[in-house]
Length: 174
Image 1 (spheres, rainbow, N blue to C red):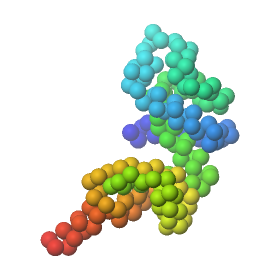
Image 2: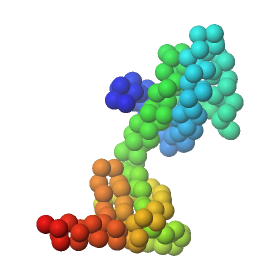
Image 3: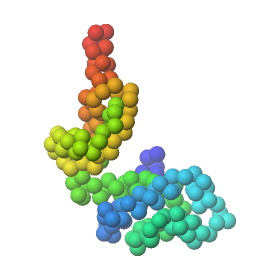
C-alpha cells in the first residue's frame, strides 16, 4: 500500500496547489469511491479500452458536473494508468484540505446511537480535549458495552466500558 501512497502524493499535492479546496474535495472523494470498485480498475486497465471511454464512464457516474481542476485530475490519472490510485489520492487530498483549514477527522465509536444534541456536546468536549476543530462521524459498536472510543488521526481516547474491563483484567492477572 505504501507504493500507492507514493504514487498518489504528487497528484493530491498538484490538485491542492492548483487551488482546489473543500468544494472539490467532495468530488474527489466520490471519484475515489468509484475507483475503489475493482471492475472499474480492470476496465480502465484493459488495453482495448480508450481513455476517453474510461473518462466518460467515471464522469457519468458522478451526479454533478466535475469542477475543471477535478476533471483535469481525472483525465491525467486515466492517461497515466493510475485509476487504482484514485482512492488514495482522494484520502491524501482530503488530509491536505483538512490541514489547511485546521480541521481533523474524528471517528466516535459508541455502544449506542448518538443523537444530534449529544453529538454536539461530545464534539465540543472533544474539540477542547484535542485542541482543534473536528469533523466527527459516529460508528455504533455494541461490543464497547458503554462509553465511547474516539480516533483522531493517530490519537485514540478510549473511555469505553470494554477498555476499562480489559484494564481491570490486566491488573488482576499481573
